[in-house]
Length: 341
Image 1 (cartoon, helix red, strand yellow):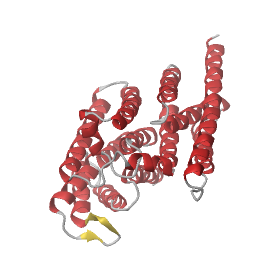
Image 2 (tube, one colour; image 1 turned 120 degrees about the vertical axis):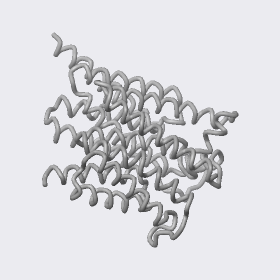
Image 3 (spheres, helix red, strand yellow; image 1 turned 90 degrees about the vertical axis):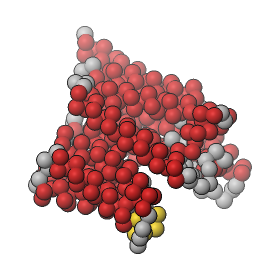
Image 4 (spheres, one colour; image 1 turned 180 degrees about the vertical axis):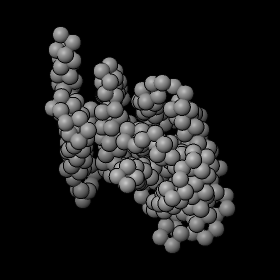
């Protein structure tokens, strides 16, 4: 009887997944037509978003096959991926659709947690969300919209405040991991709640008030508001989903502490810029290495692992690519390499 109920609920989720996928394609087609009216030279956004959507489904299926090898979990992974991608599409576009999608994701979290498979959600949700935001940021309509609300110049003082806040969030997550039994569940709920909160702010920010005017100063230019926070949260979830305890903590330290300190030191002391990335400095990369290496020593990581890990992540952080995502991918790859070795 219990198994029948679980399958029945999954079937309901499938219907919602198909519904949101259909609404996504309908809305994406409308957006394509709106963009074409503005400028016929713009590349087809619907095709681009469709490719990202299909890639997110393929990755979700691959995760379910590799880690669970069951049709039940493959279907569940596809549903999570569909609704997560749709939520990222509706984010800052349609408040009602986004909130409905997010509440469905919360229900899915409870559903999979009830029989011990929260890990599937934590693996699939961030992948689909990241791909959704990459496709979202690549469409001109969003760039035009956010260019009006994001300042053209960054305030160094605000940039420092943003990194200090990032360090605080990292400390909170690590404390949750250490002291709470259901740490992954708590972090997942906090991530979804933050996602909802940032979405609400993204709508208010267009109207403008004292709070939102201050908050919009914390975002980088030319991207949809909240992208940095979403990438950071999703990177943390993926590290927790795919990496063992010690390496996971090192990964969290890298994205929350070392990365922030690299920015703070780089802005404060400046100095010689990197030859392959003029936006970052040698002293900033050195700070990243030093902070991460110091934490590795505190965690009693062997020197033969600590130095290569800290150096590799410092080099990757110095690249042009979104550092939260690149560090997260590197941590997962390094974890698998270490486990094989």
